[in-house]
Image 1 (tube, chains in turn yellow, orange):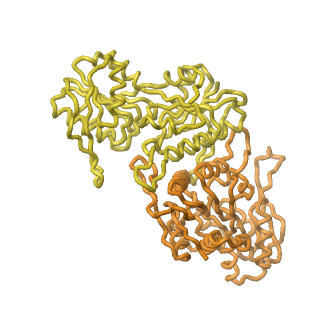
Image 2 (image 1 turned 135 degrees about the vertical axis):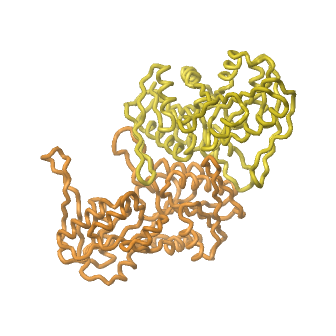
Image 3 (image 1 turned 120 degrees about the vertical axis):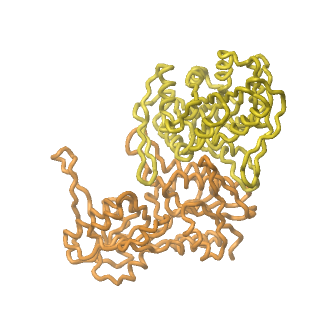
Amino acid sequence: MRIVSGSAHSILASEIATILRVPFAPSDIHVFPDGEKRVRIDEKIVGENVVVVQPTSPPVDANCMELFFLLDAVKRSGAASICAVVPYIGYQRQDHVFVSGEAVSLSVVIKILESAGIDRVVCFDLHSIKIPQLFTTTSLSHLSALPLFAELIKKNKWMEESVLVSPDMGGIRRVKQLSRQLGNMPYASIEKNRDLTTGAVSADILHGEVAKRALIVDDIISSGRTVETAAALLKEKGVERIYVFATHPVFSNETPYVLQNAPVEKVFVTNTIAVPKEKQFGKLEVLSIAPLIAEELLKPATSN
Amino acid sequence: MIGEFVLMTGRSNVLLAKQIGKLLKKKVHEPVSIFSDGEVRVRIVPNLRRRHVFIIQPTSFPVNDHLMELILMIDAARRASSSEIVAVIPYFGYSRQDRKEMPRVPISSSVVARCLEAVGVDRIMTVDIHSEQQQGFIKGAWDNLYGSYALIPALKKKHLKGIIVGSPDKGGVARATGYAKLLRADGIAIVYKERDVAINNSSETLEMVGEVKGRNVILVDDIIDTAGTITGASDFLKRRGAKQVIAAVTHGLFNGTSLERIEKSGIDKVIVTDTTALRDEVRKHPKVEMVSIAPLLAEAIRRVQTGESISSLIL
């Protein structure tokens, strides 16, 4: 096995390589003045099972194209098999036609990935349960960060006097799943409304009982506004301490300020996406998914 | 008779698209917007059912974003039941990465073509693609037009006497020969780099074949990027006695310190087309002259639409 990495997250790639004790060298990626990328894989990979690690996080288009180029280089160099580890798949929120005339951007990304002639894709916590159906020719390993969160919650004994909270109705499945992993601990959901003209998020209704401690669980944090409004509502309802758990830190520039100033104790995310120094903040803690990926790579690929 | 068709553009060269629209007397739709995390959003408003659609989008800087816009527009058009989707890509980004020049590299241009094909493009239209073999990257039709359609008339207007057409490298000889014929030039000259084998193959000097003393030299090339090659060749030609050096180039990328280089060099004029959106400082530069490629593209679109020959358009 050989681990090949793009420029989106070479730290994660090297972590996986260390756990699996396989050689790893970051690829040679040159960016021309006009933004064109030239990728080159440094080590020989002929006859090897090659794993390409590259989340397609922002800048999403550049990271996507880089991944497609890497896969092409691997394919043309005679790899025995190709597995793309894309912990966070960009464009996953555009997974169907919301308004007629739209593109289904996620289906486009998957179609191009599959056209590269790869054998397997490993990814984490897709936004909707219907997304795996978009993969038609590739074996998909759809992993979840929830077991990492469950472990942490158990270790801190946060199950007592606590409630799991989904910040919107769409995330209720995720919260139910985590509740099952934690001996059916209670859960609740907030009804979030988005003003279609201003884009402002309001959280007014809470379905379920609150407790002293609330654990907010979501898949993606981007602006942090959803967490902020959810936390404010929970505080209003009498919750004393709030902890946040989310798989993908798709942070924008304002996110660190929003979350650091929100009425929450801690924000736990995973490293499906690299969090650059300027986007780290005091309340943030990053858990590693590298062991989960390494374990999955040792298993044979399952068919769809 | 022109059947029903729709013109669309992304954000890479709206001005060019609008000019094409004006020539064809058609509205140009702009279906692209951007989400806060940088993801592209496409929403097509007009009815495309059983209509042909022409998507005008050069994939120039920032190439990856403009490429993704194009790919998503093709997907949206496909889903909106368009009967034929033509990607009009005047400048085709990544076209210089068209071969495996060393081990374990991709053929990036082929990856780009495959992306377009995977989402269902029916036809690709380009202007002066870096190497014409790239047309073989897809199963569908690929019409490659020539920038000479716009550049030759601009050069003729200068009423130059004693023209020598020059190529700034060995690869451009075929192009230079073509221009020489069209301009009824007296001959061609080729400037090329020579490596000195004696000093470890590292030292490069310019050499040339042809005679340029006292002549007006038209240097032709497909892309002007950082302008190193073309200014180097111009200075060399001037040292060899050329009277005037005018560069005629299809795609003006003008990256890095290109304008500064042009300013300082002996080059007298650079004529480029608007296959890419030219920045204001390029348009206003005294040594740069722009001719529009819109008439060529409008005519090609009209012919694709009516089923007329495109090859007779090719100069």
